[in-house]
Image (cartoon, rainbow, N blue to C red; front, side, top):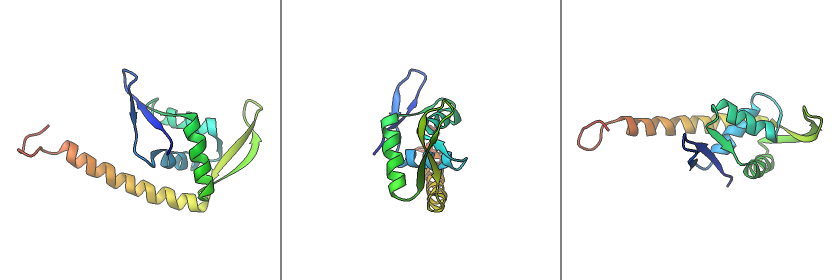
Amino acid sequence: MGRMATRENNDERIALLQGTLDLLILRTLLLGPCHGQGVARSIRRQSEEVLFVDHGSLYVALQRLEDRGWIRAKWGVSDNNRKARFYSLTSKGREQLTEKTSEWRRLTRAMGLILDGADAQGEEV
């Protein structure tokens, strides 16, 4: 699986859950076709510079998503006039985005209930 990390104030990196990168790539491509570097920049920018995608992991994930039929790629020219593969979401990818987003919302809600709730002695943490 690919690597993606968050950056804390002290530049400490925290590994994120499996499937996170795939979900973020699918969500990014919902906005329209994009080349790999653009996907990485978009994730970083939209997360307010918290999520950083390792480029080696990004391209492995893009290939995996393409193999699954969730995205498609075609060659084009980037803004800086370089040849690049542009990725776009397929209808199968849109279905997966909906499903995986729902799963993540359930997971984050459950984590919030536990983290924001009372501990075993009934005291707030």
